[in-house]
Length: 292
Image 1 (cartoon, rainbow, N blue to C red):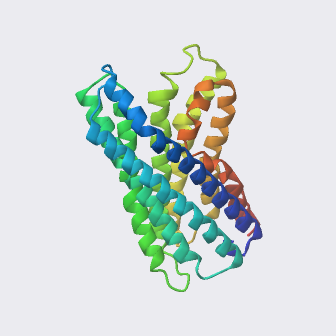
Image 2 (cartoon, helix red, strand yellow):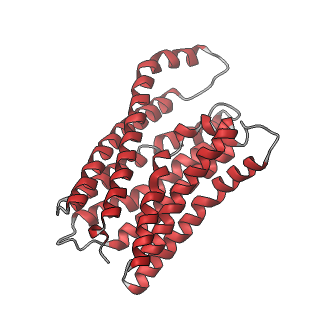
C-alpha cells in the first residue's frame, strides 16, 4: 500500500500544510503586534499594585514564546514545501519533513518557560493572573512532544532510500496527540468552565465532552495503530485515518460549539485550530485502506 501514489492523499496533505502555514502566519502577526505593545503593557502592570508577578520569569516567558512563534512560521513554510515535494514524488521530501519536525519540537520546547512562570507565580502569588493549570499545560506539552519529535526528526533525516523509521514517527505521533489532549482539556478546566455561562445547556455538555474525550479517544487509536504496526510490521492506515479524523473532529465540534457559547470563541486563537482540516486527510487515508 503506497499512500504516496494516491492523488487524494497528496491533495489532502497540501491542504493540511497550507492550513498549518496560514495558522503560523496568523500567530506571527499577533505576536508582532504584541511585541510592539508589550513595553507599554508591562509598564502598566508594574504601576498597578494589584498585579503581582516575577518580572524576569515573565520576560523569559514572552521572549521564548515569541521566538517559538517565529520558529513555527519557518516550520510552516517548510511544511508546505514538503507537501509539494511529496505531491511531486521527490526524494527530498524526507529531509524537508525532518526539518519541519525539528522546528516544531523546538517550538514546543520554548513553551517551557511559560509553564515554569505560571507554576512558580501561582505558588508565590496565588489567586492572581497566573494559575497552576496553565502552568501544567505548558510544562507537559514540551515534555511530551520535544523528546519524541526531536528524535523522530533525527531518525527521519537518517532514512536512506525512503526506509522510514515508523517506530519513532509512531511514538512522536502518540505523544503529539496526547499533548493536544492535555492542552485543550486543561484549557477547558482553567478557562472555558470558569469564564463561561454558569447556566449550562445541551451545547455546553457537548463542548465539555469534546474537550475531555475526543482527543483522548484519538490518542487511544494512535496507540492502537502503533501497536498494530509493531505486531504486523505493516501500517494500518484505517487506524491512522481514524486517529487523524478524530483529532480534526475535536476542532470541528469546538468551532460549532463556539457559535452558541461565546467563551469558546474567545479562546479559539489559543487552540491548534489549523488541525480542523485534518479529517480531509484522515478520511482519505482510511478510504485508501478500504480500497486496498
